[in-house]
Image (cartoon, rainbow, N blue to C red):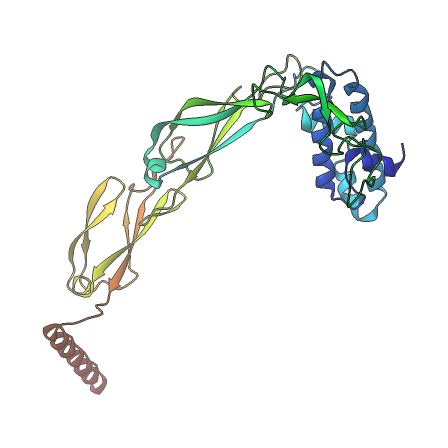
Length: 345
């Protein structure tokens, strides 16, 4: 098989990226795999052509200097790559059955729920293969119809007039007609969507990006006797308007007035579990730090909980009444006089 013919079989050009070539190979391999086409005797031959074409393209790319490092770093035959990446099989371990694909479900939860823990139910859409068309999306029909891609010519049509573009039409394989119609059971999609409910228990202290696995709830295996994949739930924690998490510690900024900072006194600071009294000392400065021990995120695996770190932000008033202005001006004069006396002494 020539290199040019191999690119044509895979449906890509010689300038295509390696990721596109692999994507195209996986799609064709799944489409023509004999186990997925029990009623199509030509599928096995087409599958072998696809594998041979991919091996030829791999060898061609390996001789290209810019792809040499990438190729040898992950050098595998097309057959091995198909089993590992498409079917999920490691051929070197015959005892391991082929598993179906893993599914991922992204679940977003509030900040407080992640820290305190929550039990909830998630609804995950499942793609169930159509039993009537066997996931193909088409069923045989007694009345053949003209191929819409080549308009019955058997070759792709391009531009004005009936000009050939390529060796044969892929849709009808050069026959010019199709003896199939969209499956009425699944409307040509090849699958049905079922909603499945799962109970998810999120422990206290869960961090952003945490993963929870439901074994055997992924996609069905393409190989007979193979086990289904897993469902992996990835938790995304929403940001909080007041708290910021750093490890097990919670950081926050708490605003106090100029008078509260100067005179000191008790203020109520919110925490995860309610308000806690903070006794501000006199002369508290902007940026001063206070710590509430064990008021942060819960610790896991026997670790202690974190602390809550409170940074004081002294709010400067934007508008002053006449009385407030007079008081501040008097304070400024006294402060200036005190500095001058200290300098003369």
